[in-house]
Length: 370
Ligand code: NDP
Ligand code: GDR
Image 1 (cartoon, rainbow, N blue to C red):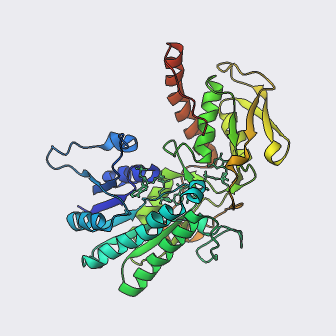
Image 2 (cartoon, protein in one colour):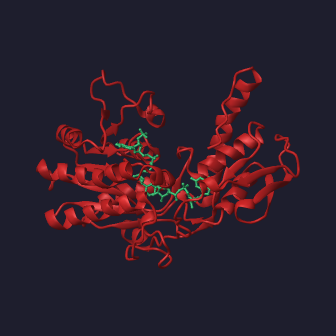
Image 3 (cartoon, rainbow, N blue to C red):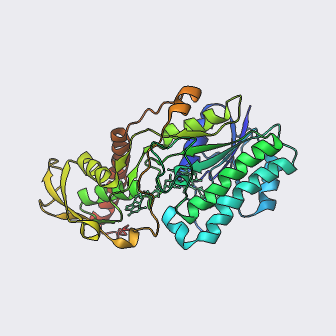
């Protein structure tokens, strides 16, 4: 039985990857952070009681900022594969927490690599580093491939740049199987609530159900190459199954503006929008509602721009070239953008119908506007 260790197992990708590896017969270990509240909602369905015998899913307390902890866990687990997914992953927040982000996303990667080296596991343990399309930053050329130069545009991306290069360096210096997956944006119903897609699909569900009036967004002109996280974790696994250690871009090759994602998400509940105004004055109003289940007034303003969501430096255009991963890994996404949006909106409608029920029976339902 292969043994995998996942950092960031409580996050979106960690949850889908853990599920995938369990289905492939792996013993899966994950590192979770101590939190004052339970933080395992995304993996509760695969949790196994540690008091039982022969369990294949085990969690360890830990943090990427603590090298002694990382060394101890790797020594104990003796993994065949490490997936380093743990990170402060929010680009805008990284402008507010730059040093922490550098420590966890940059030096955290070094801590994993160095632990494997110090423990003499360089021939046994393969390492996957969660690199990102944010490395490309300021547009140099599109579509972006494995050979496109990097120009990071946030403390997050700069920290990830260190993670990328230290992974390449350990591969070359110590002949380790250490590789980067340069993944473009990938989303799902498990996506963190403050990333733009999930913020939009939650708002669509809440607005349709009468729980929220409008959603405030930032730059509606940015373009992203969005895929489904379920497809993307499959690529992570494939990257580690190769004979040769190489870096791969994982993307769909199709880019879409934030504004069009908004339109598509509202269309999923039968609401049509018209956008007007420019920059910080842009808004969207309802022009049609084709769904009798949702009572929404025609002309209602449901989207507005709030400059607080503008970033000091922005990444305007991402569009990946997945040729190498499609040919060498045989990877092909199953979800297109329409199916992704449908999956997310359907899940959020279900989630917030529960809130509406609570509200109608007198319980206070919090507003989630962020
Ligand atoms: P999430 O934000 O959903 O998950 C991040 C995970 O990292 C969580 O489990 C979080 O724990 C954990 N974490 C945060 N800080 C630390 C720390 N100091 N020590 C240990 N663990 C920590 O991210 P995603 O699942 O979306 O992304 C996974 C990885 O892939 C990240 O590294 C991200 O930067 C990268 N990436 C993501 C892309 C995407 O579009 N999703 C695209 C390209 C790269 P907790 O639950 O306690 O907060
Ligand atoms: P990103 O994702 O920065 O690409 O990083 P995010 O969804 O946060 O932003 C995408 C684009 O949408 C614009 N935007 C907004 N973003 C947020 N969060 N909130 C808003 O209200 C809003 N309005 C417009 C942003 O300006 C941006 O242009 C994600 C993360 O998962 C990273 O960890 C990962 O490395 C990259 O994707 C690839």
